[in-house]
Image (cartoon, rainbow, N blue to C red; front, side, top):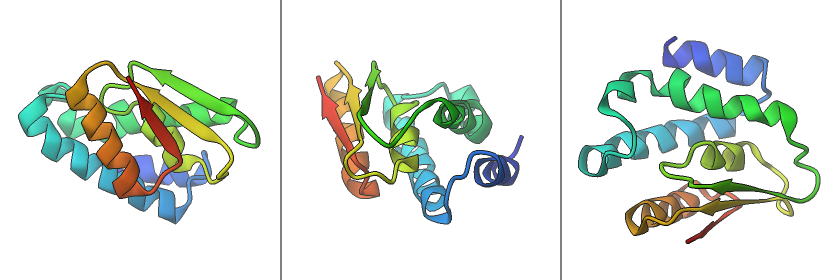
Length: 124
């Protein structure tokens, strides 16, 4: 499944906004660039990142009530599913907490949170 097909599903079936789609595109671009040096995801899945990683993570929005509370992503790695959930979230009082032990991955996640202007915190 190609990027445009996944975007159609994200918008029509999962209610991702245009703004969220733009942030997902920036996330994917940042991930692919960082992956050249750090191998955050398997090289074999780079060409299928929209279906294999973005859509798989995005499907969780159907099961989360973003009105109150928070969600924790333990072992966040490259940001799946936590970054995708934070991109979807529009409630400023709802938090997405990303836990990652690897300093390299933590730095990547912190840079993403800032770059994407999303409501998430990164912890070790």
